Amino acid sequence: MTTTLANPILSSGGLDSSSEASVNSTSPFQDSTHRKNWIFSKDQLIEIRNKSLEKVKEQILQLQEKYTEKLSANDLLSPEEESLIVLKYSEMLLEISTQLKYPLHVKATALTYLKRFYLKHSIMEYDIVFMMLTCIFLATKTEEKFVALAQFLENVNAITSGAGTLTSQFIFKNELILLQGLDFNLMVYHPYRSLYAYAHDLHDMYGNDADTLYEGAQQKITDLIKSTDAIFLYIPPVIALASLYIVNADVAKNFISKKFPTQEAQLLRQVEEIKTIYLSSTLEKSKIKSAEKKLKKIRKILKPQLEELEERYLTQIAEEQRVKREDKYRKRDLQQQLEQKQFL
Image (cartoon, rainbow, N blue to C red):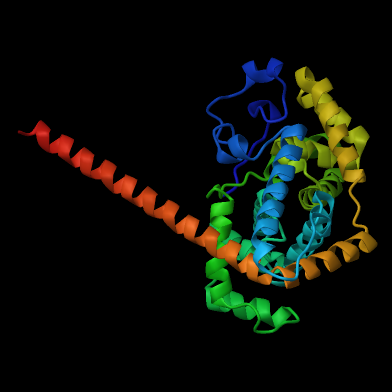
């Protein structure tokens, strides 16, 4: 489901309004749900994350009033703690996908689904282990590498410590929650395709050295998707350029200067921003252990409340789908009536 984007000028994601005149409005990415719904400013991203977490905390504190064992607001996870745990399971997702021998675009799509879901939901609400595995399964379908559910379960349970733990019931339930959490926006445009589009020019400019540059940049793209918020802040072609910049800044500067001279200053600023984000992303094991300890306590104490929240959400999803179906049928019936009147 990925699409090649060879030129950052053709997408407006990270470009300012002065570049809008050069944007090709018919570009698939420009009109995609990825561009419209999943690219934010830094302030918007912080606001979305904080609002989502505050809403969950409020729901949990309200629900636990009927139970004797309770948590205070300080016992719940902070945005930073949530991000650390999501990062840990992002790494685990890549490890499992590699063991299952899924191609790069399936891994990247699954990873993007996981990060999109937990941008607007909390790991205190939904078990990240089961959601992580559901993201992998959904990505195999959307990226046309589908395996039967029974086979997927067998493969996953064979390589994880809890053999037989993952069942079809968990996948079915979590897939519905995941789809709703993604607003059914399943299309993902990956920076790998943009990097691939640059490969020919890189080879012309740097000969055999281009292969090493390409492989290094490809790995950096995976690291950026996994460890940073770059996919929410910048369009895929700019992330591809940034991956090259992280590998070799001189090569990237030369490439940008030759290929995108009118956007050079702006692109250099953006790739430097992304490099700074990348270098500041670290997986601090001590902090993760502390956050996971809190999460374990939260999920143990709040198990009844979380189950109630989940049932509410599933009921809400079912109701929304019922309303959509009724609206669809109503529009169809109205269209049929109009067509019949035309022949009277």
